[in-house]
Image (cartoon, rainbow, N blue to C red; front, side, top):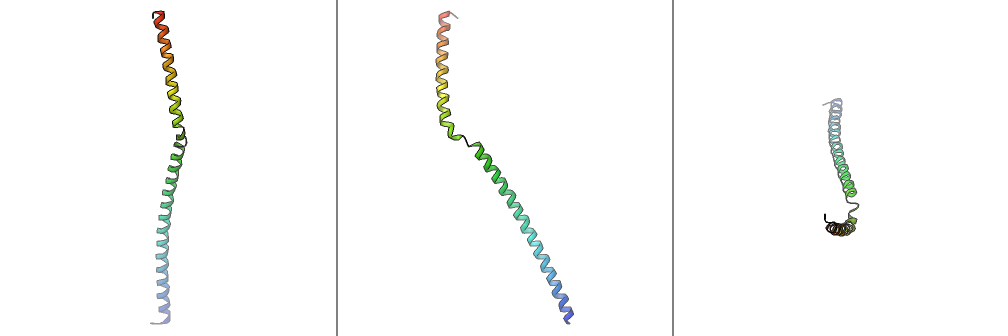
Length: 89
């Protein structure tokens, strides 16, 4: 084999290696983009959960206030029933 033939063989092998490297890097880049999209989706879901649960600490106070409101409404109902019975209606 001549030196020129060996040079052409080495250039061809270099081209093949370069093409394989580009293909592998493109595959890696596609995977990275897929992972990034998934991470963004998880981040958005996390922010939504945080927004939806930001006021859960007020549930206890809300429950107490609802109980107070129910008691007051029952007192009004009792008073109204008493007034209606006295008026004969």
